[in-house]
Length: 273
Image 1 (tube, rainbow, N blue to C red):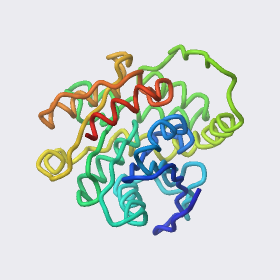
Image 2: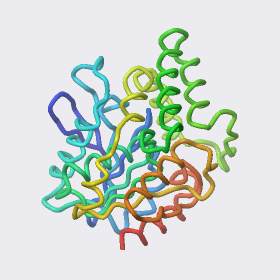
Image 3: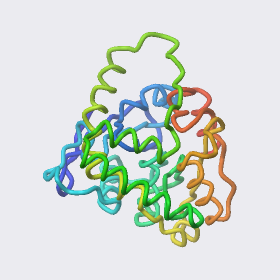
């Protein structure tokens, strides 16, 4: 467990295993802890580096009133890779973390060997009128939060992204103390996410031309079990189409890296190879 000072923040990151660097970027209000199981599957072949994006959990911004900025997040990820060595990294970004990865690959292509962007919610890339409806829905999320609080904002967010009423599989074993701590931290990030993250993350437009024509290999991932009405699934397919490639199907749904870590890791190894 380490920290890195960057302009305007201190970033928390972890390192697991040895080998070429694999930077893993979580999305939304989540943090490095959600990748514990996946890191265990990959640490025999990679130096797995999950981190908390600035504003989440242990990555503390100097000014917590600022909205999230994908360029700033991309620069943070590039600074981490630089601090970890002199070679480009493999990168996995999940959801909003995939948006950060797309910014990183477009603006710092020398830092990335291969990017896997798993279900990035790049709403503006949806066909119309879906894009306009999605962006309006995200604005409603923020408005509901501002008027009625966190619970109302998250309820509206789940409606907009297509996860309202989604049943979670009960865990096969009781949660560990580490898992309990992770979910406690994530709960503490939700208000920051609603106030400063929802609109800039969902409204970010990846530089498709730079990603398509650049030296970095960019792979878009979708979940085998993700319902096709969910906004991140549809956005990912739209992005893949614009990049001129078919999306790679990963085990599980939007959080398949946690529910199917061994199978997800195996697919990731194949993509990187």
